Image (cartoon, rainbow, N blue to C red; front, side, top):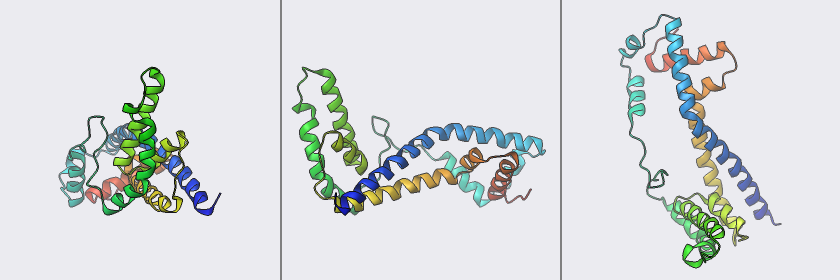
Length: 212
């Protein structure tokens, strides 16, 4: 195994772990926000504070917070997957790098190339084709690679792929950081009552500039 292949394996392992973490946290965020809202309201009640009175302050921070909360849900396709922005030049360059791998997947998995005599096999390969196509269109190269590995297809240029995998790692890191910076997540991670109360106090100060 050469150096670039070793780096490739390392990046794939890192992406697998981070994507799993992102998926678990993302699926839990609604529940986390609900728990935050419950604790926040309870804190206000215990300290004889009025949410309505706080919100009358109309600070720029609170105005921005409301805009974020009232923002429309992102556009999704027919499968419920979020539609991404227009691809960047880096995305287009990466598509050229991964096109050979994707085309090999298509040759093995495209439903038009499959027999329906064995429907279980047909459905498995069709799912792989759809997953790889989504990954290729949305610049999720780890998905394309995962499907390729399941099919025994090896990349032809590890060095070029590694650069784009590092970019994907940074993208996932950015999303994880966004989740973990939220007050809901910080409250969820707090280990004791004192830490939880400090998080709520910081939340109130950040939005309303009221120091408790």
